[in-house]
Length: 498
Image 1 (cartoon, helix red, strand yellow):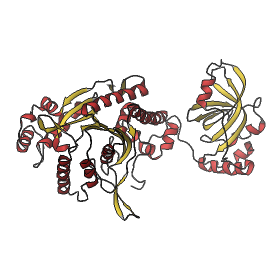
Image 2: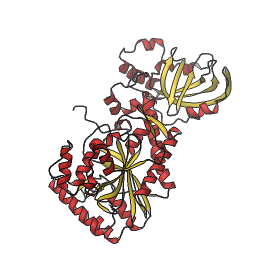
Image 3: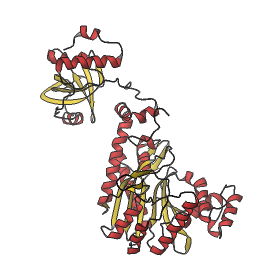
């Protein structure tokens, strides 16, 4: 094994030193990346098992642990190794550690992964420690780690080298552990509520279910242009028509070839569900119960901090119709306005720059976004959207320009979108044809009518409530993340050369 003389002959370049040590290790011990190693306990299991061990007490228990070396002191006499569950201190001394094991210490660098077998004790200072009897090299790291106290300071480098970000940043590591818990919590909540999970196509020959620019690809065998889905809605509704289940959901990846921001990523996660014989008010109740459940699972309470705000996921949430919210914010009473031209005139008179061809509903929605959205800090359901921008929702009784739709807002962000779903096949076809004509007028020539969906609706879909929740934004709130890229493990980013 290496000695001090050998160490003194190594290069001064950190990366080259590691390469030279790897060569020496291969010569001296053979396999530096063994396939087989079995630990007896994780570091967290070890801490739990010996939680009651008093300071300055040594057991006779022999354990085997493994992890990445994060710190080394006194020429390796003390090392901290981390696995995914936590850290443990390793003590190697001539009085307790055989010479063969101690001979490996000069070859161990920060970032190497080692296995250790030894006796459990707690130091006088209370540190749970293993007196090493045997040390094995499991993985030699060829690159230096970032300085552990600061991790990666370049935020773009954190996203590009997420493995180093998580390795050196406990907040980032915790956030992705919480993301996993939230996603599994959504699935468990939906299943416990009687919903069946299904999987619908991510490659679609006709894209639909939302208005967005798709990613395009080509199926070589079928000789068919296809699109990455922008939403699973139309397939989930066809599942409802089939009678497979009255309550269906999917936790799905969607793809929209549009802008990137702190709240937008071209690939994102949604939970979408449909509930036969329910309506949009049932979906409001479901959202409130789900959000409350998730907050309790992550924070142990329905109240938590996001930035400098204190949010509460305790239901019921505030409910406000969009026309009433706009009237309160601007004084414009859209329900008293009869025509599209009058709506545009009223909006312009109030100082809003609206397009010359905008409808009554488009003007209402635009002013809502401009004046009301930013005020919705605590969770709120905004109801009664214009039919002009809601082609899949049922009309509000007595007000045909509005539909039974709501969006859930928090921190001024849209988190969810829900309808009392339209199931009148003739009205559905009329609205989809109108939507298609508008898309073609905007230059979206590839947009097509989904005849297979319309054929399914002709077969008869029960009255239903539908809901989509932006999972990434919800996770941002629950984990106090300032950017959507902080909660996506490997977010889209520019190439290095750009």
